[in-house]
Length: 195
Image 1 (tube, rainbow, N blue to C red):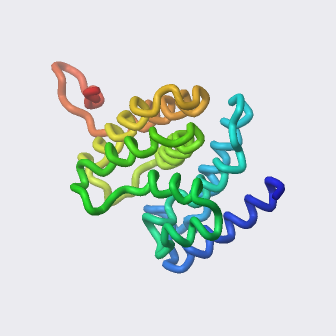
Image 2 (image 1 turned 30 degrees about the vertical axis):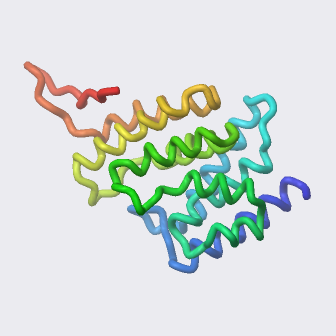
């Protein structure tokens, strides 16, 4: 199947699934499919800069990456509609709600690292697109925790895709403008991230 057909088939499936609950991008009225297409744009740009990159696989995973976590889609449904490889990738990108929240990201990253680098790039691209102005209802602590978690992703997935790693580091630095300040001597400075 050609790239355009794969994209169309996959985005229609994802849009329908996320649309069933009228899911929007947090803090906006934009339909969730906008986020998915933004993740794919990052993947398309990265693919141009990456040798031996399976773009068809990466696009499918990018468009489906939140279906298990945020919709009523089942693993079996992804397996039957797409492939076992795509379903496994989406599962790795899905937080396991049966373990403590504080451990969910580390667990997901461990599972991602066992799969092809294209899956790693989807995680990087997802976080890049999420590092926008935080929703107005987020507390300073949640904003800071999100930046810290973004650094965790950057460190854990280092070596996966130079282009997206640079983009993520840039976005993390830009996101610092939303992080709370602490008083240190005679001037305010951003909270330091411990790594």
